[in-house]
Image (cartoon, rainbow, N blue to C red; front, side):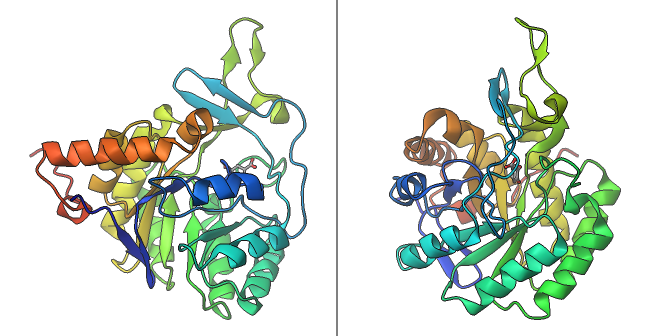
Amino acid sequence: MTSMTASIANFTFNDILLNAAGVYCQTDEELDQILKADGAGSLVTKSATPIERAGNPGVRYADMPLGSINSMGLPNLGLDYYLDYTIKHQSEKPLFLSIAGLSKADNLNMLKEIQASDFNGLVELNLSCPNVPGKPQTGYDFETTAQILEEAFAFFDKPLGVKLPPYFDIAHFDMIAKILNQFPLAFVNTINSIGNAMMVDPETDTAMIAPKGGFGGIGGAIAKPTALANVRALRQRLNPEIKIIGTGGVKTGRDVYDLILCGADLVSVGTTLHQEGPQVFGRLKQELADEMSKKNYTDVTDFRGQLQTLA
Ligand code: DHB
């Protein structure tokens, strides 16, 4: 038997895969499909704002040759909707509630509401939404990130993690890890989409998506090396109590394996889930088991974080 489990805070996950926030998680109907999908050990809800938002107008998601590009603009049904859903289902599996306020005050107010509620799962504070016009990604502003965490942990005592944008410089890995290590975070989720990229439709010579003049976050296969680097760099720098959810570039079981090798505890799937639907988890679980048996591993702990480098 192959063992594929993980633990974060006091929770045990019976499978290590889940959706990436934003994909298959906006409505009850979508969330129910992830909740019962073979191979999915958890789910995360669409990043919520205090009240519902329609998101950006026009074509806001497109598949592209090596992945996808999107600028959704935080369409969501509001915090209360996702709080109700997760409280209703929290006895079935450990669940993640994602929040993405457009200001520090929004984030702190949502955390206060969650703190006062019956929610007993994990909260993912999204510091990396790239798609709201005029609102830079908080995760690239180290001072503001530290300030939000300082104020949040002054009152919030449920398991809390952060969703980070990809970093591209060794100095930035050092800087963000130094900040995160100052707080009792349960986990980090890395990476969000690679923000503000551009893709051209060769038929029409237009940008592939409408919002923000065509600028959008890219994910899928093209993001895999950046995801591996961020998981690896953060695993090397973060306190061992801070677990890692690896996100980015998963198409096959081997991609899941590689994220675990770099240090991921759980692995989430965005673009490929969007393209294939919730059956993707069963496929990926089987492919991961096949990859592990090729290497004579029976437990993900046999190789988690064990990436070797060349001399
Ligand atoms: C959206 C995109 C993201 O990458 C994110 O983290 C949150 C929201 C969006 O456009 O809806």
